[in-house]
Image (cartoon, one colour):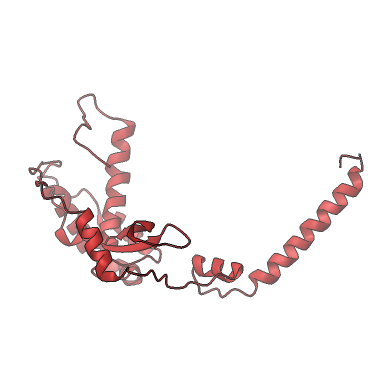
Length: 207
């Protein structure tokens, strides 16, 4: 191309693109279509998913480590704050819950071990009681205690972790808790940010 051989460079570029396409088709044809995206990447790269073992680090030590970090002896429960009109009980309709369940992708389960595939298959039956739970939570300004519990999965931050601090704690909450959070954000928070009234204050709100 720099030497002015435009036709030769164009022909070479097409040949390289053809070879890349052919190679990709060969490699992708060997993938198992039933595996998830992460497993497919591991098949392509040849990496194996193994258990990371660190001397002196166990499930019990992780539990104690995170308990020490996330326990605040000075913590005080905030006073209840009415954030919705209790007379209005239909904030989230069952017709809006159904597509949420029907399009639910495979995801990790929380401490209730309620799988996403069960919610997706039972969407026509589950949409009404789940909508009732969502509306009850919003109208009373109370999040069920079970929905606030989470499983902590320590994910290595370094290639060769040596201590507890080399792991990133990933909190996996219940599937229903994540669905409700997503719905509240999209239906209430985003519109508030776009068309916020003058008297709306975010002084007591956090991440």
